[in-house]
Image 1 (cartoon, rainbow, N blue to C red):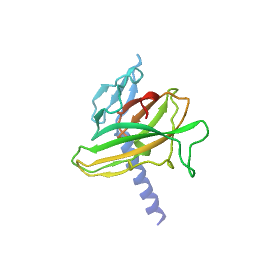
Image 2: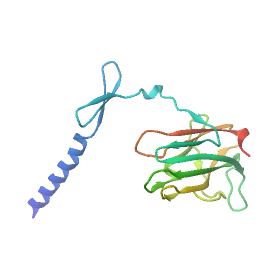
Image 3: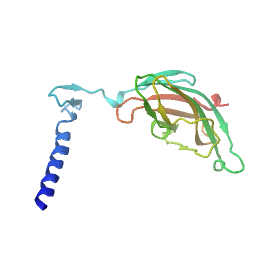
Length: 186
């Protein structure tokens, strides 16, 4: 019985190891260029990530990324209520968004995993789960289905600029960035 367990453990280890051996790998050349080494024996140069620039979108712009259409429709302030409110010198920034599945298969959307707000200095802002928002941006979307909802973040009142980042595929590269200026928020 001991031999069977040991043999099974060795087989599982070999299978897991083979996944890593045959997966794509990256390497750096002597002159500092990144190369993707593919499992089929071919290779290609990777774009220099330090020089990669992302286009920022304005509020109200509908974009297509991965298998969804996304739009940051509007932004508003909320000071909270008697039960829940942001900390002193903070306010809730509530973002109204639309997500549409443009693929032929169902997709999952998660505001916690796919959306992030960062301030001018690059710090991530806390999601405000107790803020009074309308709708939700979480769940399964059937093909051609539209979901609209709000997501709230707690920000400092003194801040004047944020970037709202959508990363619809948590494994693959690619993101969309919306710029939000204080003067645009209602």
